[in-house]
Image (cartoon, rainbow, N blue to C red; front, top):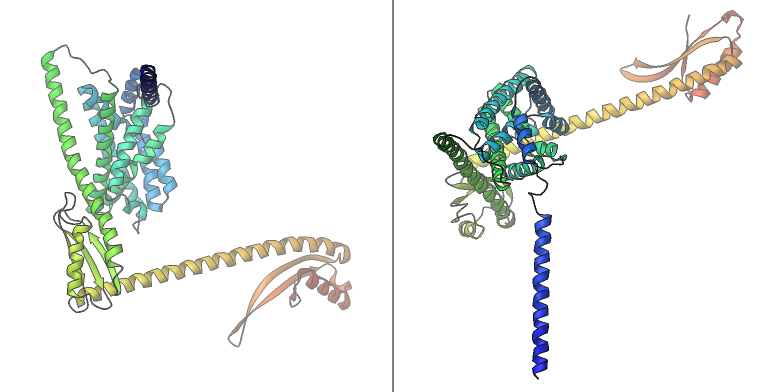
Amino acid sequence: MEKTDQKLEQSKERVESSGKYFLKSLKDLGSQVMNLREGMDVKGTVEGIKKDVEFNGYNVWILICSIFIASLGLNTNSTAVIIGAMLISPLMGPILGIGLAIGTNDFRLLVKSLKNFAVMIVVSLITSALYFLIFPSYEVQSEILARTRPTILDVLVAIFGGSAGIIAGSRKEKTNVIPGVAIATALMPPLCTAGFGLATFNFQYLFGAFYLFTLNSVFICLTTYLFIRYFRFPIKQFVDASREKKVKQWITIFVILVVVPSAWVFLGVLKESYFKGKAKNYIAEKIQTLDTQILKTQASYSDSTNIIEVFVLGEPIPSDKITELQAALVDYGLKGTFLVENTELVVHQNQNDTEKLTGMISELETKFLKNSYEENVHIIESQKKRIADLEKQSLNTDTLLLKQIKKELAIEYPWVSSIGLSSLILAQDSVLSKKEVISYKFENSKKITPKQIQKFQDFVRIRLSKPNAVFFKMD
């Protein structure tokens, strides 16, 4: 019995030992795979970022060129052109420099990065504004509209894009991540959109786009700062203790001035994104399923009270049903939560809001007519292009055939010096008709008999597959 207990105890110990070994191995593997500090080049990273902070000479012209390219892409609604502009833009340098300066207490680098960053912004705004003044955009393209208001996705892209940038930049072996970060964080397009707003005096676009650019820049700075501290980059030491204290105070004040508004902005963007997601579900599941014809629904976000508007064209919704829909706002997280404190449901029906419904119907009719017109224009343009292509194809075919026929005529009818083919539009009794005309010219025409001419014409009609063609003799 004792031997059995001992064996069980030994087996238990072996299992526990194996389990601990397995967990330790798993932990070591995770540490090895996820280790960010391995392969770092601290000195090279610091030197590289400081070098990219510089903004003079060729960097200025590269920025101006990239701004022009991005503005052209926004004007023509070309995503490919915008991506090309983001790849050559030097805007990331000063932003990473600010993050490095805060993380290493380098006040001189911070001042230099902020100064160059401000100059870059001014140059970019002036350049893009000049472009849109010289080449105005008469229609606001979707690429411009997409950069006029930040969303939670823009914030997340800035955070993870900035993280990828500093992680890749800190490696001894450089990768192709930095160009991808430049594209993902999309600093250039919103700055050009702000220039568009400045050129057109559209301050909503100006401030909205610049707000998005600032938000992206701030979160790239913050992620850079956090990773610099995590990587334990050496903090700048000062001989004078009082100067070191003063520098740290200034940097702390700067961080507070940047972080607090950014946190507030992030919370606002998060609230708006949360509201729109919940409102979309609420409208799809509670409003669109009603037994009446819904003309339109719209959800409007506000810092105080959000509004979901429903425009009813069919049978009016009963008051008890409206009360039930209002109560359901709580169930969908649209009322009484931290992210959405209050939402009101406003129902516009025939009996109580005729004027607003009439305006909505008129707006939809205008939009429908505009879409129909644009669709018809597109169809007509497509047909014109198709006809032109067919005519060109026919012309090329006829040209090749005429060349071949001329060679054959040189053997059978050597007295034919030239031959041509054209189309003639005839107007007779207000009726238009199209005739194929074959023009020709003879050498020594006096020696040619009418029978030979008829034989020549029959031959050409057959070879060109144009039995009704009219012949015209050139002098």
